[in-house]
Amino acid sequence: MKVAIFGSSGMVGQGVLLECLRDPGVDSILRVVRKPSDPLPPNFPNQQKAYDLIHSDFQDFTAIEPQLTGLDACYFCLGAGSSGMSEADYTRITYGITVAAVRALVKASPGLTFIFVSGEGSDSTEKSRIMWARVKGKAENAVLAAGFKSAYIFRPGFIEALDGIESRTPLYRKLYVVFRPIIGLLKLLMPKRITSTQQIGRAMLAVTRNGYAEPILSTADLTTF
Image 1 (spheres, rainbow, N blue to C red):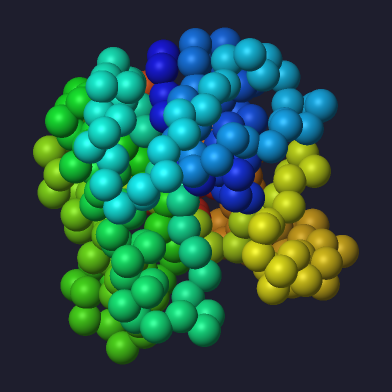
Image 2: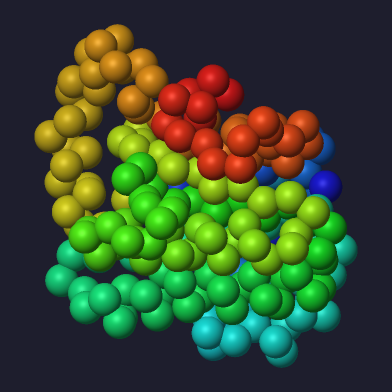
């Protein structure tokens, strides 16, 4: 199986990358990046399976469409926090980059499975009073309407970072420091409200292979993988 990952340097993207490296059924992993990826941690196995496709303009992927052919899956983990951002800037990143990637991929590999990592609370009606929720919902709708063989939306809530992976967002790193000592207790009290980087990666691979009954998967769905 040949997969592409957008956002492979982020917390979720690293988790997905690691599970793809671990999976013997994944033959190659294309990381679509703006600049060469940093060296992977030594605990990431089978690193020879991953390679970079460097492209500077994330608003237009037309030039690299030939390199995007023959893919079985695309795992779109790229995103940005909305704090301090205008709606226009947040839309340009969250919606604009997603749509640009979708347009290129549906031409190059229409038979792939596209999985978009959104977030708990995203609004598919695009009418929410919360800016990030309606923008995420708009991006979700674009993915589901693109015309891929299959497309799914993952809406995780709290994500436990495993395997030494850390968030690149300073605020999230601080929150993890606070919550890390009690994550075990929270998982006992709310087992369907907390997922992990491992579960998200495994869920992507399982859904790619076997499909899923619904196009939108919540945190509770992701905890079953």
